[in-house]
Amino acid sequence: MIQTATEIDEMDAILLDVVKKVLPKVQGVTLESRIREDLGADSLDMMTMVMELEERFELSLTEEEAATIVSLADVKRKIQQMGSHGDAGV
Picture (cartoon, rainbow, N blue to C red):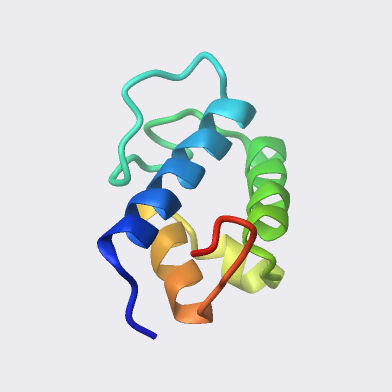
């Protein structure tokens, strides 16, 4: 599946929106941000983010897949690999 620039921009916006929702006090978030180290997310934050992403992108991540996520770029790659067409039309 080839994604357009608009779809990719929309995916980025959703990823950043989820981070802001789960970690509202964090600033300077980029796709390269490491979720635990740079953003200070704990295991509950991670679980909440995964659940929100699963809902927003209509996908399901195993615990093993979720455990491999380090940065927002990892999340984006995982979504692209799964070929999600979630509510964002991505």
